[in-house]
Amino acid sequence: MLSAQEAPVRGVDVSTVVLIAFDPWLLGGLSVALGAAVGAFVYTRFTRTTLSSARREAGQLLATARAEGEAASKRIELEAEKKAGERRILLDKEVAEALSEMKKEQARLAKREETLDRKLDSLSERERNLDRRDTTLKRLETDVETAQQEIEQSRDDIRARLQQMSGLSPEQAREQYMAEIREQSQHDAAVLTQQIMEDAETNARARSREITLQAIQRFAAEHVADSTVRAVKIPSEDMKGRIIGREGRNIRALEKATGVDILVDDTPGVIAVSCFDPIRRAIASEALQKLVADGRVHPSRVEELVEATRKDMTERIAKHGQEAVVEANIRGLHPKIVEAMGKLYFRTSYGQNVLRHSIEVAYLSQIIADQLGFDGALARRCGFLHDIGKAMDHEMEGGHPAIGMEFVRKYGEKKSEVLNAIAGHHGDVDATSAYTPIVMAADAISGARPGARRESMEMYIKRLEQLETIAKEQPNVTEAHAIQAGREVRVIVDAKKATDADAFLIAQNIAQKVEAEMTFPGEIKVTVLREVRAEATAR
Picture 1 (cartoon, rainbow, N blue to C red):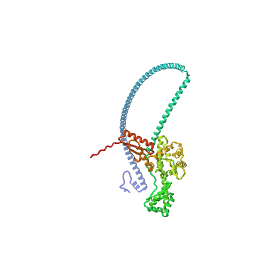
Picture 2: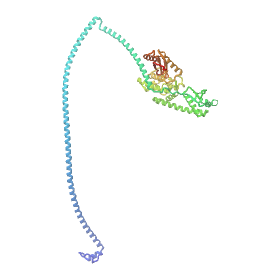
Picture 3: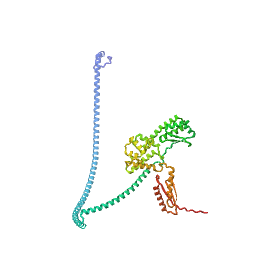
Picture 4: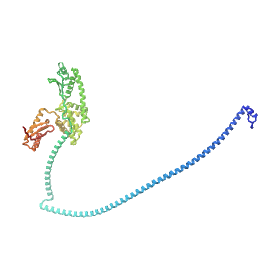
């Protein structure tokens, strides 16, 4: 509250102030009015100051914008002038290049036009030459026609004169001439036919020999096939007694379980197994070997080992058959046929394993067929299956070709070439296709090649003696020796009686006589030696 002494004296009454001081409503209204007046005053002063400052800043911004606009305009103008200059230079360069290319094109056109003019002149000259040739040819044709007419006239005159001299009509003369030509032609044809047949026979013999040799050389097989030996070694004589058993019960159990004959003789360390069936013989031999290794020999153990061996043998047969089919690359065979081929692993023929022989014949047949232009795959199939009847010929009546043919036919083989090759590879039936003689040739090659089959000692010695005898029959031969198992014979001649030329002649004569008189696998080399030995003794 203001005192009377502190109240302003300018234009304000003390009573009024006192009244205001003591009237709260009046004091509030006065405060509001005073606040409004002060606010209006402050707003007016602030607005004026702000507007003035804004005008100054606007003027500065406008001036700055105008300066920057003028600078940007000048810069744009300079860049535009620079780009226009660069564009003008580029256009001038392109125009210059276009003018240069145009000049070059004009030069090429001028040169081409000149060339065309020269060609046109050449064609015109050639056309004139052709016209001259046509004129000459027409004149020559006229001369030829005139000459032909003269020749025809002369021929008619000669024909009439000959007819008058011979007294024969043209038909009679022609018939007589044709008869002479026919007779001469028949004679020439007979001579030519004989010559062709002789050449064909010679060429066929040489070609067949070449194909056979190529087939043997290209098929690289082992020279000695594995043979199946069915003799069981016994470590001691005591084991023989255990194998026989009390009153022979063990050996009887083994024979009953396997269907073979067990031969126990005085041969030390060996028990032989005998049976016509190679599979049963193999089962018995392996079961006997297991018994010997195990040492426990009694009937129940025998039956147990035989059954286990039989199961193992079935698996091995299937494995051998499948391996052979894969090796020979044969497709589409029935499992029974594959099993039968596996059985051939345990079959031998003259010491040669029949399964290896079948694979060998398959590839030899393919090689021969390829050389002759036939289907090599079909020939390989025929050769592979040709001896399949040997897997069951001990169980059926008849030869293995007929048995094998019926067997493969039963299990789905439809190719007539294969059936005929199986049935006829030994000549039992007539060959109805070219593959049958091919298989016959391959079968003979496989069986007759050196080392393929065992030869008896007696036949072997006889062949060597015959070879030496043929060599010693030649004149001037002093010694003859068969070496390398009969694949070579070395002949020694008397150097005083035979010359070098005689030695070559003796070698040829021996080779020819061996070919004519002996049967042998492979080939035999003849070596004739002629040497002079000079001896002296120093004392």
